[in-house]
Length: 303
Image 1 (spheres, rainbow, N blue to C red):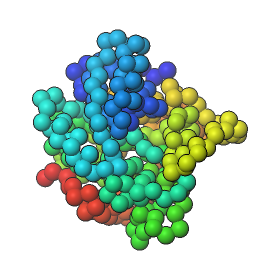
Image 2 (cartoon, rainbow, N blue to C red):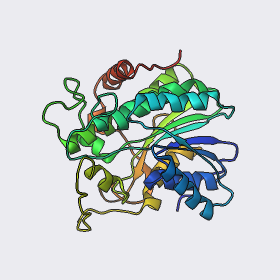
Image 3 (cartoon, rainbow, N blue to C red):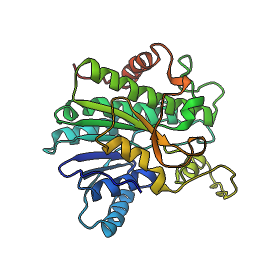
Image 4 (cartoon, rainbow, N blue to C red):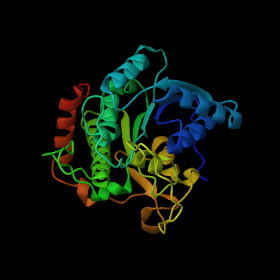
């Protein structure tokens, strides 16, 4: 198991911290000495997760705050609360996400749910927190993408999937957008000589509630989970390690991307992914998407 290096004195925001990779990352970062802001949509679930972690790591420093990444007003409210506080934030971990709801759903702002909550919400949160993050001596933004980004495509002519919605392809677009966001943020940080690293990770095929929660969105009767799969998979302890490495390792470099190094990149020990998938390598693709996202969210990077 990957040992998180000492995080004493570091304050870290983890979105989606009440379950799956977010909860595991929260537990292990807190055990390494970090103070964790557990950013969750449902505070009761966040409190339950905090209590569970405290039973395992009694010395953990945890606070629960509400954020709904599918509602830009909530993102702004959360960011304002952080900016008004007296605690320096060193790391933002954009982990929360939703996967492949069977029918097209929309956010509070009218965006397709996956594009809105997986990408536009984290994009706005990152921009809003950047002035605060940049006060840290060693700021970092770590974004969770997915191997599915390899089949994603940024549909500039229909980003919101108003025509012929495809659950899985819409998910691929949102996770490719996350990858492009992280890549572009790293380029901006380098250009402006910010003391900030932008890194990214993917969990391979990790067994969490992500696969079932999204599939049941919009259903009147929950879909029964299936244990029948021939795809290699791994538990959350192993699946969270690329995210932990990207968020905490002192050896990471700007724009680095980490994931499992085993079968088809689905399972195994964490390794540096040699290059981004072809889907992310279009000329000016990341910059173009960034500009669109700024307009859609009404946020921009500090000068």
